[in-house]
Image (cartoon, rainbow, N blue to C red):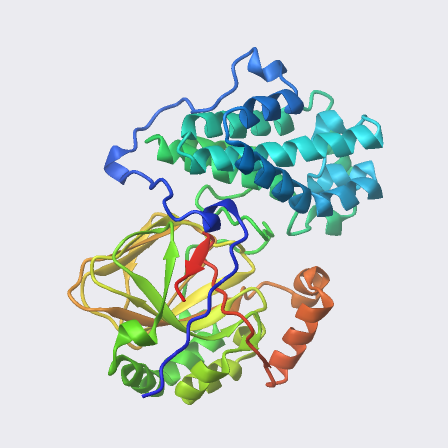
Length: 438
């Protein structure tokens, strides 16, 4: 029997570069506390970003510092262009901290570099298991954006065009700071909710459990679970259940470990997670689609599925004993639909505060920008078809199209026309960083 092929994803961040990462402690080991690790002392609150970066760099070996400098220059490019556009735009998007607004342009760009370098150094410290020091770095960066005695950012938001205020990438850097800070708190055995709640108070997210990093539109309805009765694409998947299940079983009849591509992710704390992917980023994995033509066809026939440029569609397999730790997907543009195929008892998912189980032949649909966690305590493999679909409230023309490159826009147009481009490289997104095994 033909088997699925596995292709590796490029390694582009600190986590993707290192396999032996510190693991989050189990929930029982996390202690609740009103204090947040990494809060700057009164003396540290007076430090400049340069002083913090100099301190952090001295804690790290030289080659890591060089990598951090390279990453910082790469990551700051977009914010650099925003700063050059104007102060109002930079304050609203979050390219400038409010206390940097009145600096000369060159000084603003220097501050931007030191902030990005410090964020990279903080991640490197955590990677090196110097988590307490990493938390101090993230706390300093969070403080940098909270200092605004004259209300500069609020004034900029009030004066800015609504489209700029609603930009999905607005305040991305600050969201990233709080995301890493919360992760550091949890690694230290502390309850991360204090960091999450502070981020909500800062207006970075609306819900404590819903914390996407890459794209966030707060006006989209935010709820953990959705019903297939609300989503025609999910109904189409359920109607094709028998055909999809037959193709899935045909793949499983051989050696699943050879057929399903394995990947490593920090969210997999035990067991194993693997997949057979059909579409990603509006591109088609031709070999996989040829193995399961009816599954591929029903996905391609649904406009709210086939055009998800920031998503993918695949059979997902969990072996018994798997635990996926709590994490959030990268965007609230999409919902994630799981069509239950092979579903043994004892497999559960928590989304927000609610726990549910899969059922064969039914779609379990959730907003994966909400924090979610999975336990497989059953006896056999669990397999579902995962399909990303656009959020029903999302206006693609207004919100998504302006974010796309010409290449992405063309891939989306071809997918909508039913002529998908061939997939060049397999990708997958959980909101955490993933490395596939070749």
